[in-house]
Amino acid sequence: MTIIDKILCRPCIFCAIVEGSTPTTLIYKDDEIAAFNDINPAAETHILIVPVDHVKSVKTLTTDHIPLLEKMHQKGIDLLKERGHDPEQSRLGFHVPPFNTVDHLHLHVVGGAMKSNFRKLKYETGRMWYMDLTQLQANLDKKRRLQEGARL
Image (cartoon, rainbow, N blue to C red):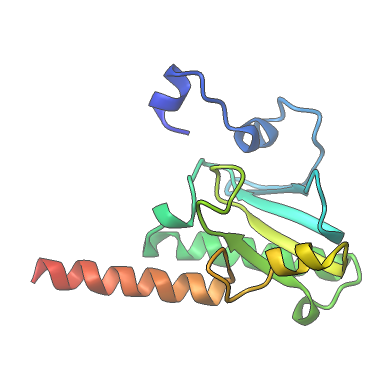
């Protein structure tokens, strides 16, 4: 969360969850990431993994964030396995603004049967509103190459 957001009293619900100032139970937390159940699950298992430090969205990421993204992804795989889901049959991805509901980067970790066809579509990779880690890394690499080309 930026200092401007704090001054203007625009609280981030995910920052509040990470800080422990809501009744939400954390499934996992370390110095970089935290995980908790989605309040409106799309499937049997629906976990959100967020950076502890506020990062607005996939649109504000740089290649410097790739280790963080990889750590989030790996934790998602671990949590799916702990709950008996096959990560290859699950969905791990990020909504792209303006299709996200909270302006704090979060990885959706979705396993098991989807609750509806709409939810299935909402968390389908390759759509303009939802991307997986591979797509996100490719976008960041393209952004980096364009920035380097602009400096030449």
